[in-house]
Image (cartoon, rainbow, N blue to C red; front, side, top):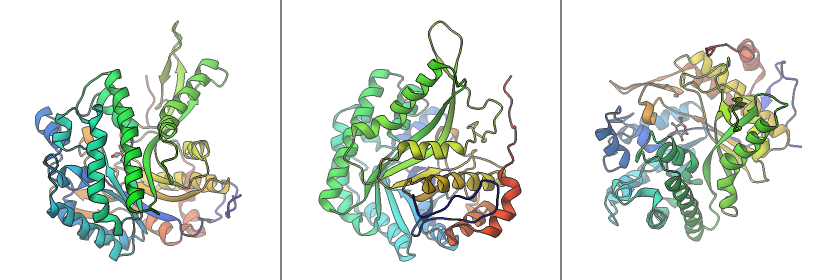
Length: 428
Ligand code: BGC
């Protein structure tokens, strides 16, 4: 058992986390920096008629202000990404000014004694890579390796944890299956190839980083999903749960086994699998079935956090590299944070080695194909003036970070909010 005790679920016993736990929040470059003009997303936004990222949060220029806020809010770690498209805007040409910019950025975090978790690839590609077929082409893994070889020696002194690739399978889904992201090519064959090239790219990056920094901590951020059968007695639904779990949560790790120093898990989704009564067994996602959902329609399911943590645990340290809610009601965000953290705590008490939690996101930002509407931020951003306003949820999270857990008074104060479940949407 871990060094924490589990109190009964409904009392106000403080939940103090293991010493050294990382309390942070996460962002990605394209979503917050602004003017990412050499990327495939920038190109796609300008041609597709979708909302444009434009200046985003202008963090490229305002990082000092944002990092000061992180410190004021007692977060001891931060996850962010660098932009390959800025650093290598055309093939084989590296822009030293941009590299220096990231050195300044990371120095600013380190000077505040904030642990840095750095993502090398978070969905966006340099336009030149995408024009050559992007991740669907074998050569892409080699281009990525060359980029990693160039950037790691430059940034190694400022990074505590490396994330090679963010959500490879989420990317494949959005770009090649659901095809709502660039390059919007619906093709199972391209999806398969892309997935495999992302595995290759991760493995290459892992090895390069270890050659340069032997004791580096290297992992990736995997989108893990919690599944349940709608009818417990349904064999087909239960089988669906197992197959979905293996293929979406475990496959990438299996294919790249031996190249992870920790597991990075992004948890957002819970799916209830339901037979549709047809001849061929099919599973239907009824994720919002009378349950509380976020502004994006994603089910609020804190118990899934416990499930995925116990399911994924394989002895390696685990970091929740993303978890958050899109909501325009900050009260719901407070409840979300409390409920999900309770489940993290319970998993730790059950023996899972969870070492840190990164709320998504530090700031309201550019939510990909959904534009600027979804509000994920602990900090509100006025996109006209770029003014930052700290939300109450950020203060609550700061209290938790400062006390390394949820102290008695906070438990008591928030107790009445924790166990309420609103029925927000009842499908017809
Ligand atoms: C991604 C983020 C995204 C968040 C919310 C994660 O899958 O890594 O970039 O903003 O989900 O949709």
